[in-house]
Length: 246
Length: 246
DNA sequence: GCAAAAGTGTTGGGTATACACCCATGG
DNA sequence: CCATGGGTGTATACCCAACACTTTTGC
Image (tube, rainbow over all chains, first blue to last red; front, top):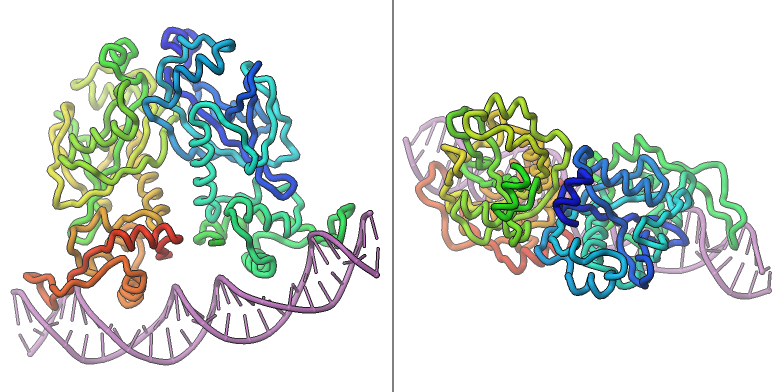
């Protein structure tokens, strides 16, 4: 986007943001992606920053637009500032029918956010340049435009690092959840297997989750108990030094 | 700074960077600050971003200018994007004699970096708007301009979080150092006391530091042994899951 | 009844913590 | 010789990892 145009629209020039929106469903971690109109190319949802809004508000706005959710758990994790983040030729070739490449030749710096949302509560919503917005399993992510694979990698890395200090479970799981669900959430973020006995012991000892007098019905096999978080205790444990699963 | 001027100078408009440069000396953590010409006000060193350089290169450039050092350990930690980061009245009142406030009324977003340097190797060097550049003990930091106290706080917080995963010691200590020096470095970052016996055990068992056949002379009291890092082993330990002192 | 997933306890090894005294040096 | 900080070992508690079988349910 050119400066003149940015100025007209009251945008901060050459600055954008991109969001890695994570959800959890079917025992695996998902990421919300957009498909660009008339192409087979996908990217992370992103947006511009208005002169009158903070970076955080801009990210909330973008998330609200794509997911319909307010009060989303959002964390800024890195700002991407290489000189050649976009390849002019790539844009001309892949997106030339959609946007005027001359407007996109200028360098852009992008602030990366990751978001954790309740999969069930999201209504995915394409933006003006995209025709589809949907969840992808992390293991099956298609080729992404620009440097969005880098951004996604770094988001995942930040998520792993902060797993011990952020209320990940509270934001990615529904209000009532089972212990195996929570365990598989941790497994999919960490990329490794966890022993179910040790996991349960640790969670229950920490007190962050409480067993309800209720089991999950309608599933095959033995009915698992349902749990809910104790948000105050969760916060407390994270502040006291974290919840490590290394 | 206004867009016209940015364009002339080939700068990215409305985007700056600020650096929290940490050193370690006299058993305490220090931060490098600039004093603005004709005032008693201090701030973190910062700079602009040229169209033809990456964010990381811009930060390296600023650091080279302020410290004389190349190949500095630098980490981006957060981007500060509130709408009203600068207070126009504050600038007019405090810095009106130095800069034209009309040029600074425009909002700026700042990318924060922290740097870890060998205190002894630095030659502090003021920039064009400052008359002094010197180290301050973290416990005695004066009032800072703009939102630089926030930035410093967040830098320290990031440093603490990454203490277990980054080669902090290697970058903040001289080539040969004593165990109590290293211990007090950790103490000053974490803000708490560590047991010297347990500290030594842990460091030596990890293998990141090797005792030399040499003691530090010319100090009062018993001469402490000197150690040096084993950089490969240090990297290895950090990758394997970190070096925790919680 | 059988396949699939849930639920559950114990033990051994290792790691973190707590703790106090002697030693070397400079002044 | 004394004040100061450096150097060191042990005993204990806790935590974590390893490990396998029974139960429940849907099909």
